[in-house]
Image 1 (spheres, rainbow, N blue to C red):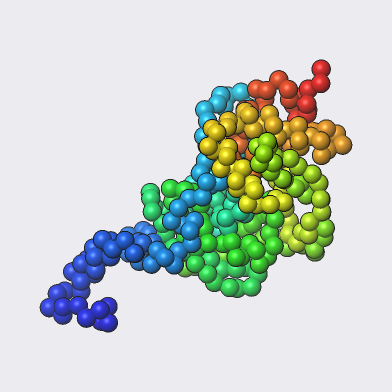
Image 2 (image 1 turned 180 degrees about the vertical axis):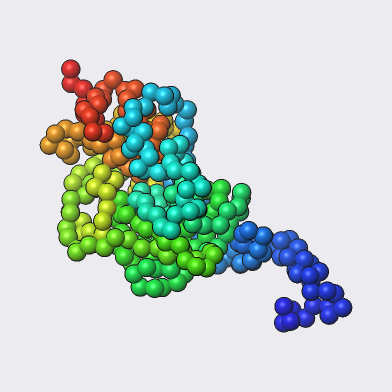
Length: 315
């Protein structure tokens, strides 16, 4: 603080209080500290996702009858641990774990964010609103960089470059590990020998406002959830389709009705897994698993074939 040339007759604690108050009144600065610590950062240096939540990270939370979900679907929901879902671990559990792992869904891969879910929230500072800055350490290369915890949005942003550098696909299994220093977290993934694997590719038809899928091969260098993996032929067109859906007020029932027949065409068995349907819906409409699964079981066109798979009912 000496370089600020504050009045030497004012006590240091009062100088700190006055400076924090002045910065809080200056719209150029953002208070990114946590747990009673004041830390200020220039807003213009923060990533866009820290200042405004992208459309695809804003959840739709339609009401549904959760009691009708089967134990099998509730187990799938628990595995997904969606930050807006109802079936995750308790926050106290994640606060005690030395490490955790989760899978990337499309909205987070699209914007380079991590979910602030029941499994991950205990690794990051807690605030009711605003943003907190943390240091992320790349477990592969040791690189250190800043990330921002967007508390109300339930995500951590600033990791797009890291995801791009390691070529992580949707469905990649990501790990977090605590360090001895508060506010620092090690991030890593589970590497494997590079191999070309089949993936679902999504394409947006903006004229008819629909989404279609086909199978194609992509290079994979990490462990991933085969049910969640999906790639976009054109992310800008998917973004536009998401915007059109938002404007038109599309419902989860309408999306599931449209998407399931597309996905079942890709399987020789004519089935699609509940995880895959959830992942596909979230390409264009952010929603936790519960409402998606309820839309599945309440639609007479679809039949539960067991193991989390659904098929078209041709009877």
